[in-house]
Image (cartoon, rainbow over all chains, first blue to last red; front, side, top):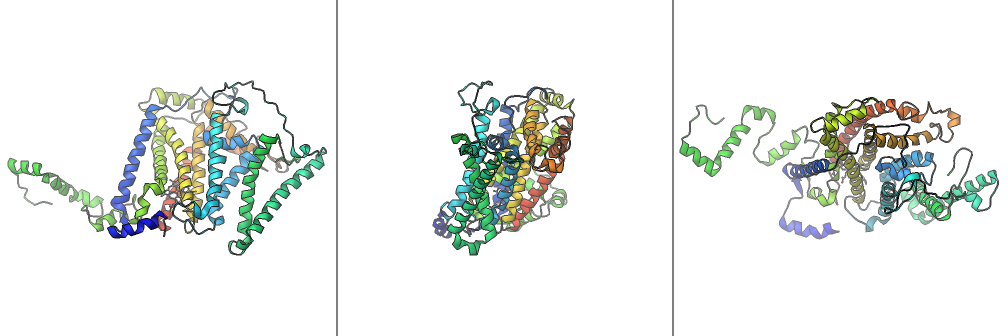
Length: 253
Length: 276
Ligand code: HEM
């Protein structure tokens, strides 16, 4: 939009639209490089890289934290079993990111900043990146203490903090007491979530089906439902003390 | 060449040239027209449109650039300069990392003490280590910001879909580079962070000994996805060696190759995206 407004002015000044890379881009890169290297050098002179005591396999620190950029995933371990938080979720993130150009078929907003022409896309990405990734990392770095319990910055990291583990599984909360019954109930809840979510999406977007295509829409809504599902699970756990939705002999969700 | 029989200028002439600044043009001319110079650079030095083109097109390092670009691609407000800075930080880690490799042995008995030696005895050792570590951490942040910018400008849309996919590989390898390097100081921080991280592999469906359906595949603690990664059932010296090789050879080579493809594709896809 701003581009359109600026266009007439450009014509008046008769500035060419294309410029030589040498010198205009190369000198910019050079300046940028100098600033970056100076900043890195100053930072490295002022702050030393950490080196703790020698590795000791018999002395487990509490808390043991992964490198900071993985703490979002480590935090999800509170709500999901390792096979999901540590393996399936990262794979889904990587595959999902790779699929973005093939799922987002909105031709608008290619090569300029715009919010209005692609609101949903911007919201989804910002939510995933800023909330599910960055906010969880910040929480993991600063607020997770011994036993992976939550501590506010002003609280003492008490390694003996007692947190009552009162969580129950969703089927149990609904009064299902037998093992097989719980499995059936959990399976139904999960399938219903995905089936209804998919159906509602296809109904709302039925006009787009022809142009966008079934496979595209189907994969898109499954990925979105998984992302929203993770948030629902976190809310269930924090707000309602629900541990698992589906319990099977092989895995739990 | 100025002339075959050099004239010795008088002092007054020389002073005149120095005062008027002409001396610099003359020295520059002497240098840029010498045989050494003209044989090194395949184009003239004078600032002409033709030389501006050749400066890029005939230089192996610069030719990944297009010769001309759109004016808007120069705006830092548009690119945030993040892709370029990521690449520069990568290069910084390569340079400082090679220097560190002269002093570091990836062996259980030595690794930690080599770090101490590097920090306290090697001239500029601490600075090299700091620069390597901080550049690596900064690179993680800048690559995320680069990706965020590319998303916000919708630059993954046709014809740049494939370069986005390459980019996702690059962000993954950037994280893996950083993660494998995290173990090498062989201190408590390193060992336990990597233990926490690699413990996840234990839960891989089918292939991890504690993962769903492992019993159908027969994965055991000594023989599963995690033991493949760390060469044993705990993070010990074999893990150190494996991570060292991955960190110094395997991942940098792949990431470097992908970066070349990435830059090449930017150019082939019509330069930096922009409003059309
Ligand atoms: C090691 C990591 C990376 C390096 C060194 C790198 C480098 C660059 C550079 C120098 C540019 C030129 C424009 C700019 O600076 O913004 C660029 C553009 C681009 N990058 Fe990356 N990049 C990396 C990772 C990624 C990632 C993770 C993605 C996305 C998932 C990505 C997608 C793109 C795309 C689509 C363009 C074209 C942008 C446009 O035309 O506006 N890159 N990259």
